[in-house]
Image 1 (cartoon, one colour):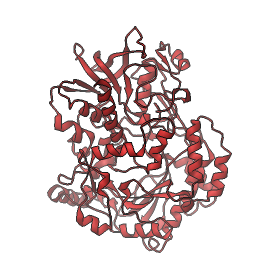
Image 2 (cartoon, rainbow, N blue to C red):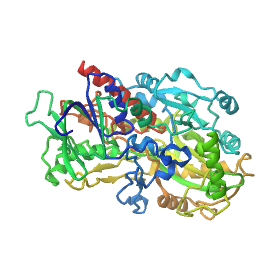
Image 3 (spheres, rainbow, N blue to C red):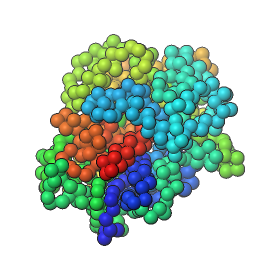
Image 4 (cartoon, rainbow, N blue to C red):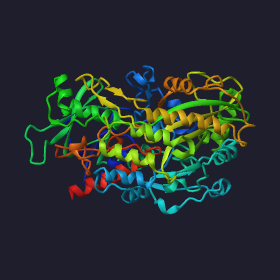
Length: 585
């Protein structure tokens, strides 16, 4: 490939890279090359079987990123799984499809990204997704999905075929504490409790990834070349600068111990994700000049926003012994064998789904809002983008019940905690994943070497402000309130974590500091913001100061959204493909 030039070189064959590559390759006269550091493992059992999803973490298809020690989390390093292989994180995630409310996408445009709003993005949600809910399940679960929000796209949105036998109690418990049942959460307004929408194929009952949905249908097409095992090391620029900025000539990559180059005639598109995209930019000479100089990297474009504005949802996990059967029965070899047979022969059972019930909760439903708003009012802008800070403050003050500040995932399975690392044999568990939907924390991703194969420093800045901590504290109390409802009090035998002995706010906060992790949704490190305000890309996703280098992945999202972002990332890639096609027309 080093002797061949392509119209477009896409760095990263993940959740966004394969989408934009496939759409560009629809034109048979256009040539596209995709560089992917991982392999094509689309049809490995651990990838395909929905119930095996978490088996992939910390293994080969996972980059297994770890943060630097987090001062406010008792100096712990925190694990951040990211997919490594064709499909990226869509091959190791939990397959949840969702959309943020319209006002959150409209915030992109408010922050300066012209043409990026809910109405515009809806076109690309429709282009990317097909709704295929089983009518019997829809009726049984009381859902009223609106088909007008979906089109005829490659990602098939389905419902899990199996739910735990205490799902009705989970819904009733939420309703008892003021969280309504949402019959149409996939329509974009997600406040309430609802069953998970899944990227699971309705016929094969296997995971749908961007590899299976976008790449495989055109695999072997002569104008689309995918190189696996190819770790991008830097973007190569022409010596002469055009009137539109520096010109990307191609990409250097490492494969089988060799450094090779693939050339781009039109554009280079970075789709390496929120952690590796800023690293590639910095080692290529685009970033904060002072950081580049520290590692003797010549500055191509002085762009201080690279690697900043890093955002993840923060969560706290707890478990409660459940008196009903949960997915923990799969720890029993005999039962696991029966479930495998049921899945293999009939495509149903526990392995056909995942044990999640979702709820998004406004502030006043779970928290002492006045105290939290007071804490927020005392915050200084600090390293938060001023426009984003203003939006976060306004969302905290909003009493409309339309803005989620907490995602509470009810998990019918054991999740390890600092209190208990493994389930007791024969026990069933109900766990809570309590996520700050709109954190104020802003971290960073920066190189720690000029060697592009050395992973960057990842600083989450987790719990670096009183608001995020206060939300987690009140969410913990809210979870305890949930299990005392009439619907759940007969189901739960005992609290496992943090445990009945942990009661005071100080004790609960210490538990949070020891337990807090991320909900694996990193974004913002190449934000679509004005350059003067720390932005890295403009509204056409072009890197400032360059003529033909774009970023198409979650790193361009300027503010955290209250949803699992995979569907949004795919929609962004769909829109990006149209932008690029129009630019070259």
